[in-house]
Length: 241
Image 1 (cartoon, helix red, strand yellow):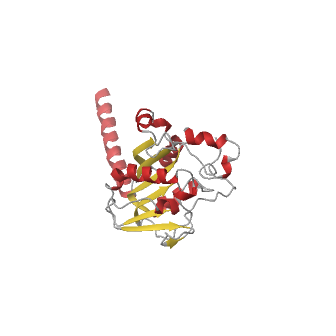
Image 2 (cartoon, helix red, strand yellow):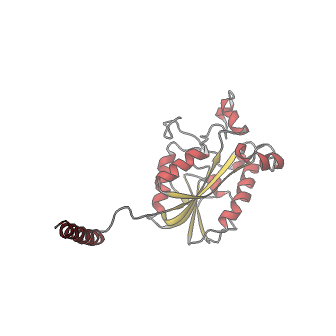
Image 3 (cartoon, helix red, strand yellow):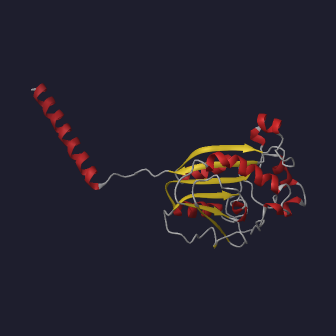
């Protein structure tokens, strides 16, 4: 397995229209994201990258939606996704539509998004499935110089592993669009063989659990435990006498 961090700089497409069947991918993502987006709530939604900015999120109840990226006409905030200009725990949800595919350090993007998300905040990630008809194109000579094959394709299990390390609970995950060159991805094939879908989505929530007890509770629990142990010792001593 190749490391996630790389020195190679990947030039992300500025629009879905810059890749073959990009409009199909964008529409399919928007359609499958609608049920998830409608359940979000809060005050702020970040859409990171140009591809995220083009995803239709009108069904999301979060009214303040901000497009963030390095460069692009549809962006409201120009910033590096690896160093977001927002306070910690200030954002309710983040959409990363293929933002990891053209990143030299996807781990750093995930950590930065984790920093700005509030507790129980939502992280929505989409990407290309390497085990699909689209993924086969990675081994075809010449195609790897063009989008989407010049990007990184991470398996869904690898994404789940990264999210578990950040203490996220996966709420929903799916694959779809088995046949990339068809508008609906091949309905019959997609229904029966979703694992071969060239697009995948992972929806997760940030969970924060207390890993250590507070000093006051820790002292109180030790005191109660010692009293019970002493009483047991005294009872055993009297019984043996």
